[in-house]
Length: 432
Image (cartoon, rainbow, N blue to C red; front, side, top):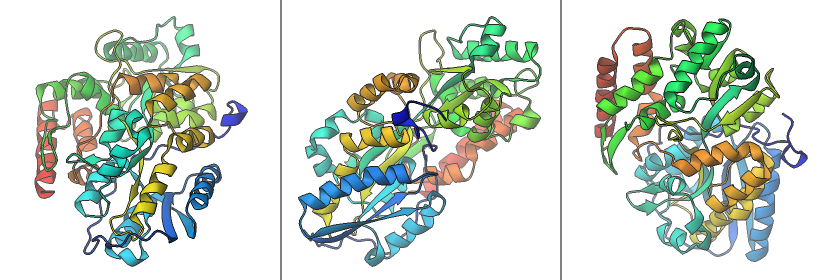
């Protein structure tokens, strides 16, 4: 990828929208201690290239250790793929557990249910910078009104499109979701070798904007009292809009039903699609592909002209383990790692979008590519139900199965949505 020199590694990796099942724990009670010196252990996620992240983190640790005499910090960068097992073990064995961890924002509710994360509501409320945290990011660390961490970075998706194809076919940039569909079919008709819009039956986060833009929701309620809403009339309308894009007139079901988000971005980057719904974190892959210099990005439009479809706000958080014996120090370190200064430096190093609205506006001015994603965030994003059941719903492929049943013709939208709703409600019920 080639960007400005200061952002040469921008968007080096995909934003992690963690979905692994939350660990079950047996003994993760508070240590009852609050030591003001000693060694703190931190677990952060490995990246494709972790060195730029390490540089930012090391600078934070140097300042932290300077501010706290007789205090050391050790950091371990753990593989994202095996984080569930590592964190489960940590929750089960506080003596070997870290004090501070990075975790996916969809993991929050599960980790809270299992008693692994410390309630930092008071400290977060007293933190001066917290007032500028965007609402969805704050929601991602909040369960039943209590705060269990600090947002670390956020990622959203927007519409990538081929400027060369649009110019050749004299097409306008779509202003509504209906125009996205009609434009995609125009491209396919004129260029049978291209997908108009690359879509995937397993691309949950690419499909969600269609549901939300049509007024649907995944579920209603809060805390331990969620009920599926995926079979509501509005949600079914969104499901119909998304699944209508699977066919020979856009993206053939035989090839696209099994595709996930990475597959759709790969199709676009390799020149096989005129449009794709990709993240800010997809930029490197696109820049490295055949379409470099021949594409642009705009917010995915909503139902009405001028509107922006709500996007899923993915990202990671930083939290303190309930079992820490250095609570005050751990909370201070959490704030420093997730501070405005650190998030701005992470953007420069890794391309991770800041969770603070003012910092995000500033980086958008410095890097024009970020603008459509910042606009998407500003228009209002959505999040998954703050329930430990979401890990089960996601890992069980409830929504991809629903989409695939529709595009394969096995079930109509009503039947597929009804079955998905029952599975979701079973998961919500089991989660207590």
